[in-house]
Each structure stands twice: as C-alpha cells, then as structure tokens.
Image (cartoon, rainbow, N blue to C red; front, top):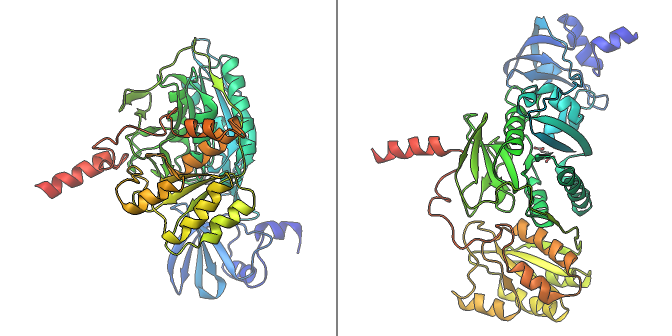
Length: 465
Ligand code: ASP
C-alpha cells in the first residue's frame, strides 16, 4: 500500500479497508452506517495501530465513540468530510496592567487531555499554553502565567507530587500572585485538595483546583466553564482557602466552590460529580458573579503569612472495612511496617469482633489506628453501642466527621510532621485545622443535592403539591 492509501484508511486493515473501499469512504468522512444493529451517524475515526481488524470506529455526534463490526454493516453512506485538528495554537496571553495575576499549574487529567487517534486513548497533551489558547475568555479575567508540573492522570498523583506542588504553590504566593489555579484529574482531586489544605495553611490568596469530566474535544465538555469559573475565583473571589471549583448543576448554570477538606468525587461520569459532604459548599460562581453560601471562610489578606509544612509519612493506609474482614488483614499491615491505619468503618464506626485482637496487636506494636465512616455523612459515635466502646478500649481514635480519604491524607501528613511523636500526632489528628471536622452538620446539607438545587426544588414542589 502507498503512504497516501495508508492515510486514507489509517489504522484499518483487511475487511474494514475492503468495506470502506466498497462504499467509497475514508477516515474523517462523516458517514451514515446502516447495520444489523441499527443506524449510526458520525465521524469515521482513524484507528489505533494496535487495534483489531474487525471494527470501524465512529465518533457519534454525542461525542462518544462506538465500534462497529465490519460484518454487521449493510451500507455506508458518505455525508461529508471533516478532518479533525486537535492541535490548538499556543497563544500569547495579552497582559492588562489593571488585571490581577494568576498562576496556573498543570498536573494533567482530562482537563489537559485530548483524544489520541493513534491509540484511541485519552492522553494528557495540552500544554497550559494550549489550554488558555482554547479558552480566550481567560484574558478578560486576569493575566495568566502557566507552568506544567506533571502530565499524569490523577491516579498517579501521590505524596511525591503533593510535595512538589506545595513547593510551587509556596513560590507563587511568595512571588505575589493574586490567586492560584491547579488543573488536575478529577479522580483523586479530593486527595490532593486535602493534602494542600494541610500542607499550605492560611494562604493569603485563593488556591483553586479544577478539572473536567469530559475532554475538550467533546461537545458536552465542562473544561471551559470550569476553567473560566475557577480562574475567576482565583483572580477575584474573596475566599483564600484551598478549594475545588467544579460544575454545579447539570444545567450548565454555575460552578460550586467546595472546601478542600470536605469535597469528594461522587459520580464516575456526571459533570456535576463533586459534592461537599457534611456541610454545604462555600459558594457559587457564575460567569463573574459570586454568591457565598457559607460565611465562615478565610478572606484574602496580603499581609497574612502562609504556613507551609511539607511532610508525608508513606507508611500509612486506609482500610475499608467489610463484613467478613479477617484479622490477618490488619496483622499483615502491621508486619509490613505500616505505622498508621485509618479504618472506614460501618455505621457509627464499627468493625467485627474478629478484628479486635488484631487491633490490640496493632496498638501494642505502636501503630496508630483511627476510625472514620463509610456512610460519609454523620459523625463517628463509638459510645452508643457496647461494641463501639470496646473498639475505643483498643485504642482506636474516632475522627468525628472527617472523610476517610481526608483522614488518610491528614494522618500521612501529621506523622510526617511529627515522626516518632504519637502524642503530637494524636493532638493534631483530633484538632480541626482546615475545616476537616465540623461541630455539626447543617440541616440542609444532606438534603440539598448541591448543584441539583433548582432541580430538586422543582421536584419537591411537584411532590408537595
Ligand atoms: N482519569 C482522569 C484523572 O483523574 C479523569 C479526569 O481527569 O476527569 O486524571
């Protein structure tokens, strides 16, 4: 095959190429495919060099890709041709002396990704320069400087990356930026938000984490809206805390700002996936307008000195309890040298009796064990049942309404800050320093679906009528 032919049928072989030739279509053709499974319309994508030879791949108008087996195709009709270009020009960002200065750090994730048609995978490929080249509205908000720190999906973020990020955040604060934005994969954004909340205490300016659930080459992408609102919150918003700024309601109306220690990704694919748990979100941000939902936040103060504490003990872990858990799970952790264990227990903070001797052995080995809840909402209350009191008697320390992942991060940080000082660790773990434990839950926090607010209100009114 000549190179030109290769390009027209890029990545396809055997029966798929025959099919494309028979119906006179090539890659990048918009096609209507009549198949034994129904009719599909979309863009015929190039295929991965490593893929099978049986399937054509169509990018549907919804943005989703589907594979169609060649032997199910009855007819292919060419509707048009549209070669996709995913290289976005890096734009020189205009500087306006009246605008605040924002530093954007990129770590990767979908917000910094595009589809790689060679492998069919989503790869981190946008440089931050391309990122704002694709969202020119950012120039109306601030002067933006960007720096790409990592290009990873967020499951690859961990203590090593947290420490680099914290140092960089410290640099940006020292250099006098008015706000900081951190682009990050959504999957573990709440872990990194918690790490920043403990390691960067009392920042003078907003530190806003942002991501997107859908990559920017998809029509329903949330990347631009999230980035615009996050950048606005960093440049102009009054709250100087570590926050997550993500899609609020499904109706594209506004973003919510969540406190870094109370936020969690709650849905694998919805754009409105982040929720504040145990509280209500801090604020709504909607194209330059800001509505505070809470008022107990730290405000911007250029005269406030940030406290940076870069430390993390990696031998801590999070154990999600399940009925039937065997004591050797805990024993194995102790034997392998883990120094701290956060348990996500059932109900008010329980594990089965079988585990008790292992908890006792952990305590005797000097391992610190803390209790959090799988229910995510509510407080650990180990005085209510006899079993809870027994677990307390084994030295397990309850952590109020601290979220399990937040407790894991806090324990790693606290043990890093105070190595070999369990009393200081315990003191730090049981004192709220960044909103990670609250006095009580708001009566409306659990009921309001946050981001579904208008929808839920409408629904309830219909039910009450
Ligand atoms: N897997 C991606 C990540 O967390 C998902 C995303 O960015 O939304 O990096």
